[in-house]
Image (tube, rainbow, N blue to C red; front, side, top):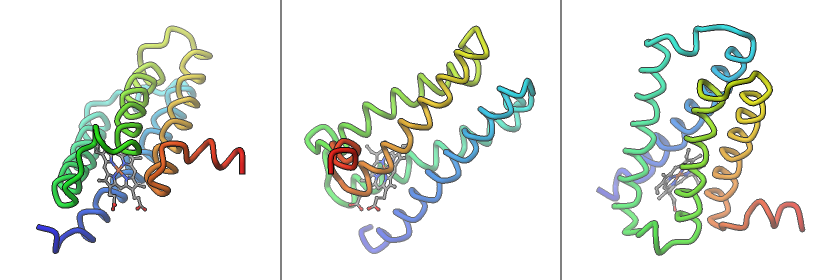
Length: 133
Ligand code: HEM
Protein backbone atom coordinates (compact mmCIF):
# COMPACT_ATOMS: atom_id res chain seq x y z
CA UNK A 1 0.00 0.00 0.00
CA UNK A 2 2.99 2.33 0.56
CA UNK A 3 3.14 2.97 -3.21
CA UNK A 4 0.02 5.12 -2.77
CA UNK A 5 1.56 7.17 0.10
CA UNK A 6 1.84 10.42 -1.94
CA UNK A 7 -1.75 10.19 -3.19
CA UNK A 8 -3.21 9.31 0.23
CA UNK A 9 -1.25 12.15 1.88
CA UNK A 10 -2.60 14.49 -0.80
CA UNK A 11 -6.17 13.29 -0.08
CA UNK A 12 -5.55 13.84 3.67
CA UNK A 13 -4.17 17.37 3.22
CA UNK A 14 -6.85 18.32 0.62
CA UNK A 15 -9.64 17.17 2.92
CA UNK A 16 -8.04 19.16 5.79
CA UNK A 17 -8.26 22.28 3.58
CA UNK A 18 -11.85 21.45 2.49
CA UNK A 19 -12.94 20.69 6.08
CA UNK A 20 -11.34 23.86 7.50
CA UNK A 21 -12.76 26.07 4.73
CA UNK A 22 -16.28 24.64 5.10
CA UNK A 23 -16.13 25.05 8.90
CA UNK A 24 -14.91 28.67 8.57
CA UNK A 25 -17.77 29.43 6.15
CA UNK A 26 -20.43 27.68 8.27
CA UNK A 27 -19.22 29.58 11.36
CA UNK A 28 -19.34 32.93 9.55
CA UNK A 29 -22.85 32.22 8.19
CA UNK A 30 -24.05 31.09 11.64
CA UNK A 31 -22.80 34.37 13.14
CA UNK A 32 -24.58 36.25 10.35
CA UNK A 33 -27.85 34.59 11.47
CA UNK A 34 -28.21 32.20 8.51
CA UNK A 35 -29.72 28.72 8.95
CA UNK A 36 -27.90 27.39 5.85
CA UNK A 37 -25.04 25.85 7.93
CA UNK A 38 -27.58 23.46 9.51
CA UNK A 39 -29.16 22.46 6.18
CA UNK A 40 -28.96 18.63 5.83
CA UNK A 41 -27.04 18.88 2.53
CA UNK A 42 -24.36 21.05 4.17
CA UNK A 43 -24.16 18.78 7.24
CA UNK A 44 -23.82 15.64 5.08
CA UNK A 45 -21.13 17.35 2.98
CA UNK A 46 -19.23 18.10 6.21
CA UNK A 47 -19.59 14.48 7.48
CA UNK A 48 -18.40 13.16 4.11
CA UNK A 49 -15.29 15.39 4.02
CA UNK A 50 -14.41 14.50 7.64
CA UNK A 51 -14.87 10.78 6.94
CA UNK A 52 -12.47 11.04 3.97
CA UNK A 53 -9.99 13.02 6.14
CA UNK A 54 -10.00 10.43 8.92
CA UNK A 55 -9.94 7.44 6.55
CA UNK A 56 -6.85 8.88 4.83
CA UNK A 57 -5.30 9.52 8.29
CA UNK A 58 -5.88 5.86 9.25
CA UNK A 59 -4.38 4.71 5.93
CA UNK A 60 -1.29 6.90 6.53
CA UNK A 61 -0.90 5.46 10.04
CA UNK A 62 -1.03 1.95 8.63
CA UNK A 63 1.37 2.69 5.71
CA UNK A 64 3.92 4.38 7.97
CA UNK A 65 3.49 1.81 10.80
CA UNK A 66 2.83 4.63 13.27
CA UNK A 67 1.14 4.17 16.64
CA UNK A 68 -0.53 7.54 17.35
CA UNK A 69 -0.39 7.00 21.12
CA UNK A 70 3.37 6.38 21.00
CA UNK A 71 4.10 9.29 18.63
CA UNK A 72 3.88 12.61 20.55
CA UNK A 73 2.95 14.85 17.56
CA UNK A 74 0.15 12.44 16.55
CA UNK A 75 -1.12 12.01 20.14
CA UNK A 76 -1.23 15.82 20.43
CA UNK A 77 -3.16 16.01 17.14
CA UNK A 78 -5.71 13.50 18.47
CA UNK A 79 -6.28 15.53 21.67
CA UNK A 80 -6.60 18.72 19.60
CA UNK A 81 -9.00 16.93 17.22
CA UNK A 82 -11.33 16.25 20.17
CA UNK A 83 -11.08 19.92 21.23
CA UNK A 84 -11.82 20.99 17.62
CA UNK A 85 -14.93 18.77 17.44
CA UNK A 86 -16.29 20.05 20.79
CA UNK A 87 -15.52 23.72 20.00
CA UNK A 88 -16.96 23.28 16.50
CA UNK A 89 -20.23 21.90 17.82
CA UNK A 90 -20.54 24.84 20.27
CA UNK A 91 -19.67 27.32 17.48
CA UNK A 92 -22.32 26.01 15.09
CA UNK A 93 -25.09 24.95 17.47
CA UNK A 94 -24.65 24.45 21.19
CA UNK A 95 -23.46 27.85 22.46
CA UNK A 96 -26.44 29.84 23.77
CA UNK A 97 -25.27 33.35 22.84
CA UNK A 98 -23.83 34.87 19.67
CA UNK A 99 -20.70 35.94 21.60
CA UNK A 100 -20.26 32.38 22.86
CA UNK A 101 -20.57 31.01 19.30
CA UNK A 102 -18.07 33.60 18.02
CA UNK A 103 -15.53 32.75 20.77
CA UNK A 104 -15.84 28.98 20.08
CA UNK A 105 -15.54 29.58 16.31
CA UNK A 106 -12.30 31.58 16.75
CA UNK A 107 -10.87 29.02 19.23
CA UNK A 108 -11.76 26.12 16.89
CA UNK A 109 -9.94 27.85 14.01
CA UNK A 110 -6.87 28.39 16.24
CA UNK A 111 -6.94 24.71 17.26
CA UNK A 112 -7.21 23.66 13.58
CA UNK A 113 -4.24 25.84 12.59
CA UNK A 114 -2.26 24.38 15.53
CA UNK A 115 -2.92 20.88 14.17
CA UNK A 116 -1.61 21.95 10.75
CA UNK A 117 1.52 23.52 12.35
CA UNK A 118 2.12 20.39 14.48
CA UNK A 119 1.66 18.08 11.46
CA UNK A 120 4.00 20.18 9.28
CA UNK A 121 6.75 20.28 11.91
CA UNK A 122 5.99 16.80 13.35
CA UNK A 123 6.53 18.48 16.69
CA UNK A 124 3.87 18.75 19.43
CA UNK A 125 5.43 22.05 20.55
CA UNK A 126 5.46 23.57 17.04
CA UNK A 127 3.26 26.53 17.99
CA UNK A 128 5.22 27.29 21.15
CA UNK A 129 8.49 27.26 19.20
CA UNK A 130 7.01 29.65 16.60
CA UNK A 131 6.23 32.11 19.43
CA UNK A 132 9.51 31.65 21.34
CA UNK A 133 11.91 31.51 18.35
C1 HEM B 1 -8.38 18.08 11.45
C2 HEM B 1 -7.42 17.26 11.83
C3 HEM B 1 -6.10 17.12 11.11
C4 HEM B 1 -5.33 18.06 10.49
C5 HEM B 1 -5.57 19.56 10.42
C6 HEM B 1 -4.18 17.38 9.91
C7 HEM B 1 -3.17 17.98 9.18
C8 HEM B 1 -2.15 17.31 8.53
C9 HEM B 1 -1.20 17.89 7.61
C10 HEM B 1 -1.18 19.38 7.20
C11 HEM B 1 -0.36 16.91 7.22
C12 HEM B 1 0.83 17.04 6.23
C13 HEM B 1 2.09 17.24 7.05
C14 HEM B 1 3.31 17.38 6.16
O1 HEM B 1 3.39 18.37 5.43
O2 HEM B 1 4.18 16.51 6.21
C15 HEM B 1 -0.77 15.69 7.87
C16 HEM B 1 -0.15 14.47 7.74
C17 HEM B 1 -0.46 13.36 8.48
N1 HEM B 1 -1.50 13.24 9.37
FE1 HEM B 1 -2.92 14.61 9.74
N2 HEM B 1 -4.28 16.05 10.21
C18 HEM B 1 -5.43 15.86 10.94
C19 HEM B 1 -5.89 14.66 11.48
C20 HEM B 1 -5.12 13.54 11.59
C21 HEM B 1 -5.43 12.41 12.42
C22 HEM B 1 -6.66 12.26 13.32
C23 HEM B 1 -4.40 11.52 12.27
C24 HEM B 1 -4.25 10.17 12.93
C25 HEM B 1 -4.13 10.07 14.22
C26 HEM B 1 -3.47 12.08 11.32
C27 HEM B 1 -2.33 11.47 10.87
C28 HEM B 1 -1.44 11.98 9.93
C29 HEM B 1 -0.31 11.26 9.38
C30 HEM B 1 0.12 9.83 9.74
C31 HEM B 1 0.30 12.12 8.47
C32 HEM B 1 1.49 11.80 7.53
C33 HEM B 1 2.80 12.15 8.16
C34 HEM B 1 3.96 11.85 7.22
O3 HEM B 1 3.82 11.95 6.00
O4 HEM B 1 5.03 11.53 7.73
N3 HEM B 1 -3.94 13.31 10.93
N4 HEM B 1 -1.86 15.96 8.67
